[in-house]
Structure formats: structure tokens, C-alpha cells
Image 1 (cartoon, rainbow, N blue to C red):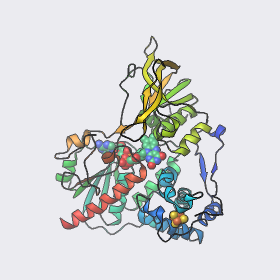
Image 2 (cartoon, protein in one colour):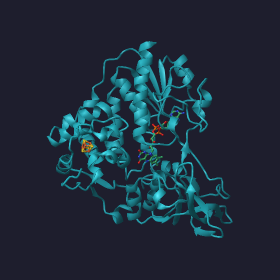
Image 3 (tube, helix red, strand yellow):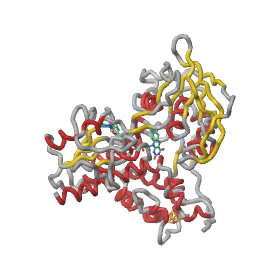
Image 4 (cartoon, protein in one colour):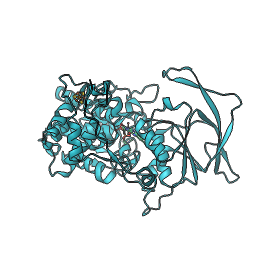
Length: 462
Ligand SMILES: Cc1cc2nc3c(=O)[nH]c(=O)nc-3n(C[C@H](O)[C@H](O)[C@H](O)COP(=O)(O)OP(=O)(O)OC[C@H]3O[C@@H](n4cnc5c(N)ncnc54)[C@H](O)[C@@H]3O)c2cc1C
Ligand code: SF4
């Protein structure tokens, strides 16, 4: 299926300028551009885009409403299934979900569903009293939610819409999870977008308590047995960084991407008005090839460093979104593919001075289906650098599982839960990265929404 109207390009900040600032890279669509792009949609009878969306957004309906100039209706269609359209429109991997399934993509370019969703979400944030803002009458039952990332926010929003009294307990001093401490400002503006979408969740009547570490300050058991909550949802994410276990990894100047990005975002190290320390030196190497690696390397670049990605497979296997890799290249990031570190090298004061690496080549496919990297004999070489950032993935923190009676975990240290979020412990549900390991915003939201329905069923039967 082809469409004669070309996809409307989204305007972006010039690469050379943006490599030195933290302002948003993509400007998104204005009304004329969003309406023109909406006119490309065929309003399919069996829309493949909807089937491919983890929260089942009614994509053709909100696109049609926008095309007809009914923006409030478009926002209301989205609000039925998602509380975070401005966020999802910016960070969802649409190319492998809705847009990847769009029928127009078979012979041409898919509808820019993400950019349209972002436009409607941003429009909605400008309107007083958005459709998502009407709190439901309370039903007298209370649910505690652990963690204020996308899973917790989605679960809490849906429960509040059903009439439950919901309180989110968050370990950090700010709410939003990875949306505030991980994904950088230049991809996801914090004040303008994240804080305002969270405000919309608050207007549903959801309460927030920050600086509460569940497992330390309170426990899941005490929330149920002493504080009178009828059920608990655990959406505590996967914030525990992995390291390579190579020599020199404990030298000064080696950090996890999580720590680096938390300093830059949550602790405002990239804002001159704050004096949060952050080390980049002149040359930074980021080890890894996912979205987290791209965010870390682009942040280091903006802090003035020559920044390099070191990745052990080839470009074709890079797990990061193609758009992020493209943006990183435009900003002058150096990519060293088929390269694996074997030791971090230090100077006499215990600070990083370089990385010893080996060249790799691709062998037979491994259990992930990707061709496994194998070391090229005799290929050792050194890269000089002042800081190394490890972006090798994360796992769930074991604290909650180890302090909650009868809560089973998987071999990978994730909380064991059904598709609907039921855990081995009655009245305790879980979802998002805490259950799947590091995944995506929309999958976490989908899990939070399914768990909200399961909690509703459970409490109605109880
Ligand atoms: C740098 C980075 C970039 C990413 N980029 C993208 C992207 O472009 N697109 C995309 O879709 N996904 C992206 N992801 C992944 C995505 O952000 C996560 O999959 C998603 O945020 C998971 O949501 P969650 O609610 O399960 O967990 P989180 O967002 O991790 O939220 C969990 C919350 O629980 C809190 N918490 C943890 N333990 C406790 C406790 N004991 N007590 C109280 N609170 C607790 C944490 O402080 C945190 O606020 C990225 C992740 C990172 C780190
Ligand atoms: S698959 Fe594409 S063309 Fe069809 S309804 Fe969805 S967005 Fe529109």
C-alpha cells in the first residue's frame, strides 16, 4: 500500500548547535504539520498499528479527530488508554511498534504516529482541565504503589480513575523514575513535559510520598498489615547497574551510565547554576550500544568531551533506536564497533588514563539470535581517555524481594509475576522493569495498566 503524500519531516535543532546545549533536539510538529501528516492515515478497518501498541491506543480514531480539527476529542481518545502521550510520543520505539506495523510502511513511509501523539499530548498540556483530569468518586479502598516510573504512574492513574485511593511511594526526592533521572533533557524536557504529565496524574487524585525506600523506611508487609492498604503494586524498576568485571574497573573515573545520567539529570550537573560534580575530562569512552549508552555519550559530548562509543558487535546489532544512533553521529560521536575492553588502565594516582581493548569479529549466532562476537587473535590496542562510562544494562534491585515475605523472584533476580501482574504473594502485584528487567516506557505502562485491572478484579472478589 503506497501513499502519494510524503511523510511530513519533523524540524530539529541544528546538530552543531545542539551538541553544545541540553535543549530538546526535535521540535515536533505544529498544527499544520500534524494535520498534514494525519491526512496520510488510511483509517484501516483492522488497524495493524493498534494491535502493535502495547497499551492499545486507538490510533486511527485520534488521528481522524485531529484531521477534522477536533483536538479535544483526539486528546480524549488518547487519555482513555494513556496518561503520558507527550512522553510516549517522544521516547517510544515507534519504529518497532505502531509505526513498524503501519500498512503504509509496506511500500513507503509509515504514518508518523509518534510525532502526532506528541503534538496532541503537548496541545493537551496547554489546555486547562484536560480530559484525564476528572477524578472519580472514591470507593473506599486504598492501594499503595511502589515506584513512580511509568509502570507505577500508569497503574496509579487507572486505579484512581476506577475510584481507588492511591498513594505512590518513591525512594528518590523527585517522582518520574527513569523519566527524570535517566532520559536526558535533550530528548525529554523535564519541567515542560514530564512534570506536567505527572501533574495530570496528581489531578486524578493520586497522592505521592517521596524519600520513602520501601524495604527500609516501610515494607510491603507493613503497608498491607499496619497501614491499611488493600493491595500493593510494585513498579520499582531495574536500577542496579552491571559491570564487566575487568581489571581496573574500580579506578577513579569509571562510573555506571546510571550514576552519570543521574548526576547530569536529577542532580542538575549539566546546569551551571548547580555545583554537582561530574567527571568527563577531555575524552570519555562509553561502553555499550543501547539507548542508555547513546544518552550517556551524547550527554558527555554536551559537557564538552570528545566522546566515543565502544561496542563489541557491529553497527547492525546496535540495540539503540536508529534515530538515537543517527543523532549521535550527527553530533560528532565516534563509534568504535567490534571492539571490546579487556582492562581499564590507571595512572599513578589511581585515575583512569585509558582502556585496553581487543578487536572482535562476528561468528555464529548466539542464544539471542545475533552473531556472537569473537576475539581477533593478537589485536590488543589502547584507547587513551580520562573517564569510562559503563552502559552494560541493569537488573532490579533485590531490596524489595528480600524484605517481602513470600515474594518469589526469577533466576535473573526479577520479581516473578503473571501477565496480569499477580505475584506469588496474595494482594501484591508487580510490573514494568522490576518484572521484565530493563525494557521500555510503553511496556512498563502496559504492565501497570494490566495490573490495575487485576487489582480491581482481586479487590472486587475479596
Ligand atoms: C538512560 C535510559 C534511557 C532510556 N531510554 C528509553 C527510550 O528512549 N524509550 C523507552 O521506551 N525506554 C527507554 N528506557 C527504558 C525505560 O525508561 C524503562 O523501561 C522504564 O522507565 C521502566 O519503567 P518502570 O516504571 O518499570 O521503572 P522506573 O522508570 O525505573 O521507575 C522505578 C521507580 O521506582 C523507584 N524505586 C526503586 N526501588 C524503590 C523502593 N525500594 N522504594 C521506593 N521506590 C523505589 C525508583 O527510584 C524509580 O523512581 C531508558 C532507560 C534508561 C535508563
Ligand atoms: S496502520 Fe497506518 S494507515 Fe492504518 S490506521 Fe494505523 S496509522 Fe493509519
